[in-house]
Length: 141
Ligand SMILES: [Zn+2]
Image: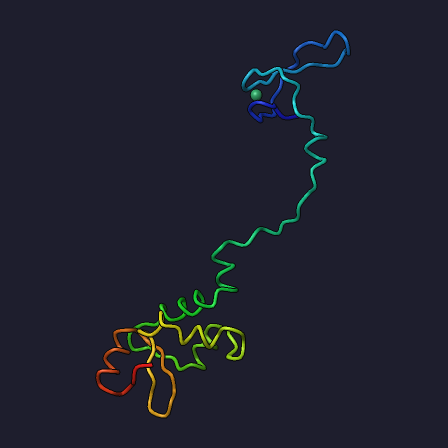
């Protein structure tokens, strides 16, 4: 039994209903003598399994390509570089999956990106990428 007013489960007996001879209760916590919510009402709710809902971060980590790539790139320290294949592998993405190519070439990731001679796309810390572009080791892409 649960109090309708405060949700407490502590009750004291409070006489009997004269008509029905049903035991009446008073909430020990707030004193409410409204008829308490029956356990049966509570039990009749469907019981849900232990599966807990996904957080937005978990959802994004699974489906939001920009979020996935941003996370991988922002974890790169100065002096650490990935080529395109390594970045995709790190992000657990397939190059042929929809939207992947557009995402890694997106304007927002330009500071992390440079093109090497031969066409390899290199990703790294924006400070190092800028320097390497200034030194013409890499080119803007
Ligand atoms: Zn109460």
